[in-house]
Length: 371
Image 1 (cartoon, rainbow, N blue to C red):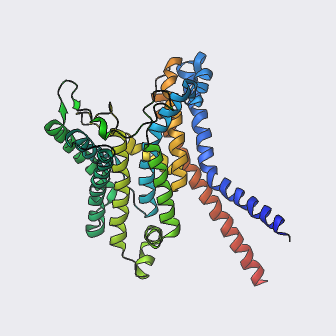
Image 2: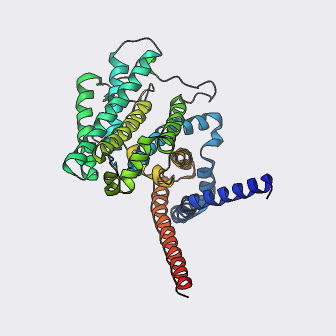
Image 3: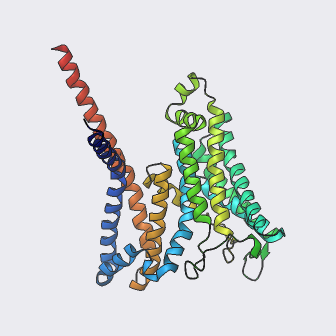
């Protein structure tokens, strides 16, 4: 067999394997869009088709500014999705990303408002403080899981509310703007460098570059390092990994620390923009739960989180412009919720089909051996 033929076969096998991995997500997106269209027909039949095209345009009809806004929102979604990917791969469910985000966001704002430093050191220190804040807050459920076997879902949910209440108190005490009932604007030196000239006035900034770099780092961590292998092993089979000499407690704490750090970084990037302020209502940040959507839609893979984060930001931006077709932006929330459910269902169905096929194959091999 020639090298050219061998290369073609490998390429074909790789394409089939990639399609098999993407199949649940693509199927979920298609089902979500179809059901979303049905909902739009129920609400406003005359504008359903135009509204669908508006949503699918993702705001690109608004030119470079629309693209910039998509990138701005995608940076946060990618990082939160990546935080959930790290936890999922270690067999953990970090549902506390909202709390880790708000803690990281507050520390970044605190530095951005009260500390006076020259750029670029100011925004770099603010970002670093956001990462540290998210990491510490993420480690708390990890420590409880490792040493007391407390379910991380319960402890991380409660940490969301504690973080939100704590941050509101800290904002009112340290960086409060009574005229707007929000945190004060950060200093110009603390604002992340923007691409306003490239994206026609959008506040798109280097956050998207940071998000892509972190995707590469986490991909390398799990694919090429011993630490990543241990984290995955602990998630896949904690008893076997413990028997192999791996420190399960250390891996749980480390995974939650990394996950929290990524969520804290997302919070810092969200608020290191002049005009993006922390409010004083006791509402959880929705982006923390969007991370679950991004991680599941991306098949709990770092590269998948990158593309699903872009996709969610894209249709969210289109959903915003759907208001021009007399549709509420909540239509997008309905569609994304359907996508999450169908992703889980379709993935489950595929696993069941694979199980049946493997069982039939094993039975056939057993019959052949008996004959």
